[in-house]
Image 1 (tube, rainbow, N blue to C red):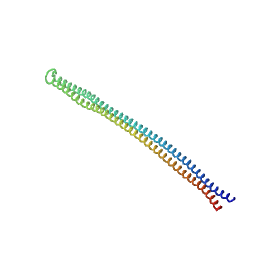
Image 2 (image 1 turned 180 degrees about the vertical axis):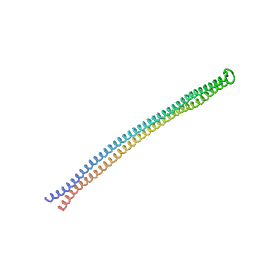
Image 3 (image 1 turned 135 degrees about the vertical axis):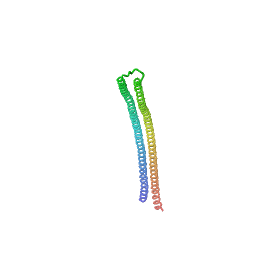
Image 4 (image 1 turned 90 degrees about the vertical axis):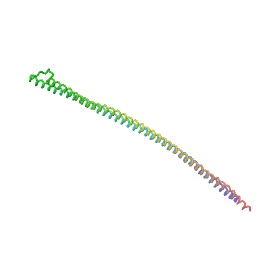
Length: 274
């Protein structure tokens, strides 16, 4: 009787050992799944947070690129306006100087004509005194009258020459004034046009940089999320595979314990009755 009890105890011990091993392996399998799920979730969450950070950083950098481009464009336009103003002022200043020069030329011509008139008047006075001193009448068409007439003609000729030279010189000064104003207008338009074009190109480049940064940031964020999802799936797959392997080992251990107990008990019984 005690022999059967011992055999049953041995069989039960082998069976329980197998079941304990199975239970332990099943517990490890459950822990492996849970740990894999936690790691997969953590990996996925980290990828989402990283992609959100990448999107935020790229958005900030894109905004800075756009704001910087706007500031640079405004600086270019303001500089062009200032340079155009300086050119206009310089051209107007030079034109005013030329006009003042023309006025000075005419004023000097008037003075020269007045001085010539005084000189010719004195000359005619001397002629009159000289002929009167010699008792010659001046109202006859002879030498005294001719001398006075020649002096009058010479004065008018001198006046014409002075006025002609003054008008030519003054006209050159006025032409220079007109040219200065025209060149100033042309230069001002050119400076403003170039400033406007440079500002527009700067804004265009800023827009391209903003779009490039935003697009690249979006692609990087998408790749980060995709890689995180892939790594998460890989971790979860490996965890479930390892857990399944542990459960298979547990099933094997449980079956081995059961069959081992039965086998031991059967062998003992056969040996006892054999």
